[in-house]
Image (cartoon, rainbow, N blue to C red; front, side):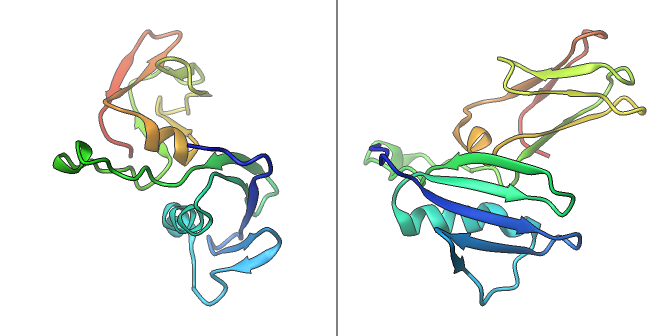
Length: 155
C-alpha cells in the first residue's frame, strides 16, 4: 500500500451521550446521520474507502481525552483470498478476568498495558487498526499473578 506524504485527517468528537460528530480535512463528514460510539468502526471504514488511502484519526472523548491512530482502507482481496472469508472485529477492546486488583495486565507482544480493576478484571482500549490487522488469538497476561487469558475474539 502506498502511503501519501500528507494524510487526510478525520476528527471525531464523542459527547457524553455517546453521540459522535466527524469531520474529514475540516469538512463535516456524515453530518446527516445520527452516529453513536458503536458506529465508529463502520464510519472509519467508510472514510478510508472514500479517501482510498490511510487516514490519521483523532478521537476526542467528552472528558477531553484524545486518541490518535492511523486507519487504513480494507485490503482488496486477491483471488487467493476470495476463497476464505475473515471476520473483522467490530470494536476496539478485549476483556479478560482472574487478575489481581491493581496489577498491570499486558497483551502478548506488549501491544498495550493496563491496571486491573478492583474486581480483578481488565479491559484494554486498543486502536481499531491493531485489532483489524491481528491474526489468531491474543493473550492477556497479569504481570504479578502470572494469569494468562487467551482471547480469541474481542469483547
